[in-house]
Image (cartoon, rainbow, N blue to C red; front, side, top):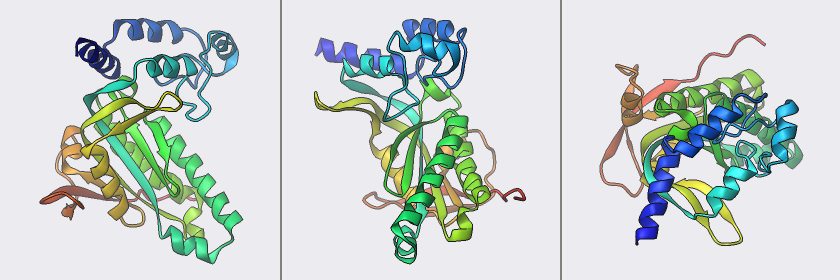
Length: 265
């Protein structure tokens, strides 16, 4: 039990960004150019600095290039995690089944890849990390150690940025539309899995609610739980409604945001 408590305390210290060793490493690596960097330790992935850090096994992970192999490897040595407050974004393609029926499989794949690319850019620009691609959707985590204490505000900005980027990309001209949801709350965050496969992920009710909001959001619509909206300090919401969450009692108050108009292209 003592070992479990120590592991949990270690994870909480790391995930909230107060671990002394991590703070020291981030200060060191930020001196070395250049971006992009590991979202945890800040080691550079490109330029002369990127070549140097690869000698220390700090190159980007293949499955998630926002984390370096050294950080992921170290975390994998201590399977577990901690319950902390985070924000989660789910962004899903609307009507993907019908769209896939109307166009070729190759064209649908190309559209999906374009969507993944613009969504990843929007998430990265706002300090988030992609947890996984879900067929026709994206799940992103906004964790204090990576995003900062204003993770709710940055998750909302990321959700809006995804919708704006999809519109600017012209995907809508081919019937490719996206809806997104954002929620903030406690979740279990850590490294889980077997000895053969360890994933860094988040679990719990907060994740489930964000997924539900992403699923019910209309084309070009961003649904933000009132909890996330208030945590972000955004003041009075422009529009609000109640949403039923499957498997949960009661309803959830959400703020409804329409997509940001696209710039001329």
